[in-house]
Image (cartoon, rainbow, N blue to C red; front, side, top):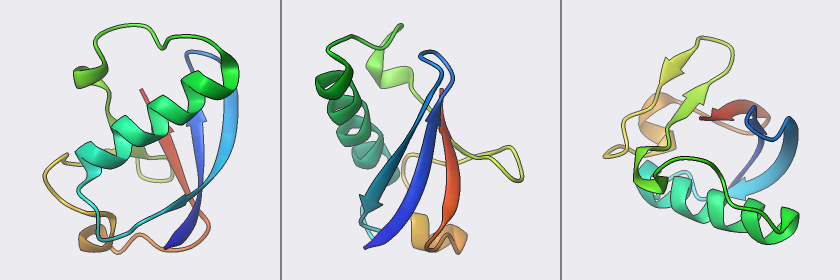
Amino acid sequence: MIMADVYVPSIGRQYDFSLDEQAQISHLIQEVAEVICQKENCKLGGNPDELLLCLMDSSRILSGEKCLSSYGIGNGCSLLLV
């Protein structure tokens, strides 16, 4: 598990998450979106299947079929959910 900051521009908030670096990114996106929606009592705009996770420092879009560790992502990373 790694600790990561996830910024969601559609609601202008940042969240701290503990993420499994071996889990498929598409599954992480669904879990993160669900937790945020429960916390904020809202629904993220658009189709949930079209959400993307990006590295904030390099603006790189992460493939939903890979895992965080395949990108060398570790503790303290900053991610963007769009």
